[in-house]
Length: 550
Image (cartoon, rainbow, N blue to C red; front, side):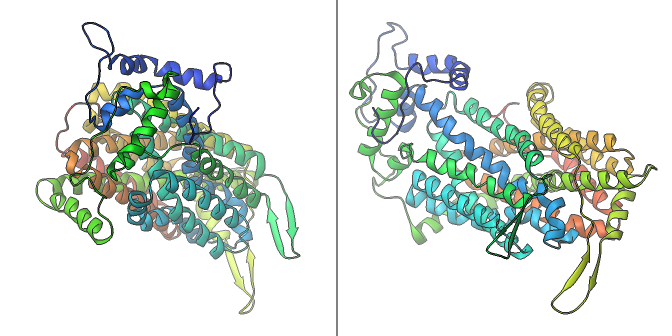
């Protein structure tokens, strides 16, 4: 049995989900297994001495190890959804407890993304220094502690600080986990595996409102130490310290990435990991692994550059992106991505609050009104009367979200999942570039249409279409970004691409409530204009190779 992995798997213990996942990749698994055989005789062929990483991982095949790896990744991907979206569901309950204005809520919604922005370079350096496994174990564990402390927040500033810290911490282990999953699958099935695990996020967007529906509406109140008052939204936040903790524990059962070990010149350790994966996947003796030695992945066979040398290496990767024609492509795709994420995440994160405002208005008024009239009425009723320097009495309207707020959030999550299936066919018809332009124009039109919506059904319908299309458009832009840049500059280009997307989310979260206070049309027109302009810019993106990216 594998020494470093605490896996106790036999034929009778494999659950239904594992069987389905195994069947989904069985065709590719057979291809991998057959790839180590001579095509004419069908007999096993002896692979060359000094195989590279791709040859080594290909020889491991696909089996129980890969299935268990994907199961271990499940809580990590769920954590990605919860870190960025959980705050949007507590706004209605925490608004009065924390005395938050509309601007405060916008800042809180965007603060995890701010944390991610500030930590990108640090985590990239640490993952290449400490290794993949340590980063995932300690990173997810630290995130669990941070989220648990945040759930005890009694003030707005305490919650803001710890959610910023949560975003700061989360950015590291999650990015490393994505790389880790990619590295432990052969190139022949890598893209299919990544598509499969990304569906975990869509599932998380359906589970999140279900949990919120079961906890937040309850009028729970717990007093600790005489002064700490915990309500249902505190318990809701505390519950989401479990997924990162589960992820950290799951990662302790996995080996270090053999690709990382090879990059450090630790080929003997990497070969042992390959043998263990091979044995678990095939059920054969580890010593029957057909590869006997590995090539070094470093030119000098020593340690990878660290400290100032690593920073200089990063600047060397950045230099080609600052020269024509790469700089034009980088500017275009980053600008379009920032605009799409600004619109998509801003409205998605504000939906629970907007839905609760509509429900509250409908319960007190018989006549129908447009979305903007309802929001304007809510803002005008939020008055704060100062009493003295130490105390402020808030004439705060406590919004009690109806069941429809949560069910409609589930509908929006389901709509995004359906869009991914439909979009796969549309890519072959239109191509990524034209489909991106169409998606941005459609999303921009939906954002503007919200201004004229006059019923709850219209609002939910438009929101569902908007979030589904803009989320899929973000995936298309990622595929285009991968195609636009060469292998030598791709990693740095994608890092900048993702950073600009998060920057757009932060800008949207901060400006939306400010613009809302100045007039209801302004924020929707702002989002619509950015996305429509991005759609036009998409048409001038350089052509990419093929309609579907690996």
